[in-house]
Length: 314
Image (tube, rainbow, N blue to C red; front, side):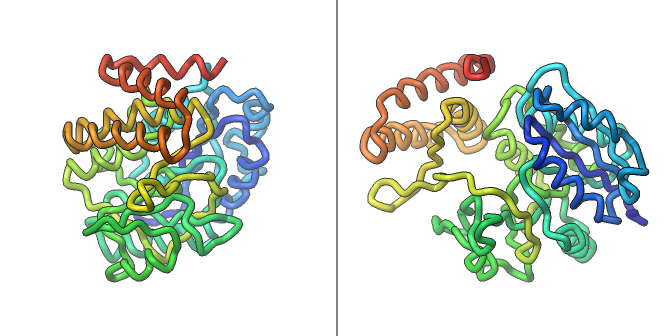
């Protein structure tokens, strides 16, 4: 158990029982974790029933007790992390380790993160490199490196750019990241209304605006399934676009990203995102219906309407 600060892991899950079980087995080996809180987003695959059999049962999880909460409706990753982070703080957490159900931290991931946290006590929001579980040298989520427009797609580029083992100003929430209680008390919890896509980025931007020190630990690893076509090249390779075949994910991304850019980067960046989306679905991956879907999402963003994604859940 953590001897200095109470450390609570928060896992958000939805209809991926086998992956959740795999993750909890790994977390059960982490002696630094004092408790695991699982937020079940109204799963229909038996997750809630299975969690009820081990809720707080130390016999099944001798190292780390598990406590679960099944929500009445699916609130998405944003709602799940908002609920879970609030719950962890209520239960006295001083450090919270956040993750989805489909990734797995490397066995030494947490030890490495805590080591850097000890040598850099000003860190408030820091995490591992998120690698493709099928190809651990590749990043699942491309990283735009600080100080320029260069985008890293592999671990080697991250390690080369790191200073003293840290890539400052960059973190990939919510995949094995640590956040301090002090930061949560200062900036609050993720925006539940975002549902998915962009809630994690907004939380990082909020932390940045609050003056938090943010970093990726280049030697820490969190394994995650490939997410497909994030960072698809466009405009003759000059930039990239986060394309998803899912209409739900695209709608939420278009709506939430416009809000984030307008709030934290200004109208110029928000307008550039609109132009980039139109270009991508006109020339790079021609899909006129996607442009219309994007327009609906942007209009919802401008109206403050966070209900439009619900049609894709039926």
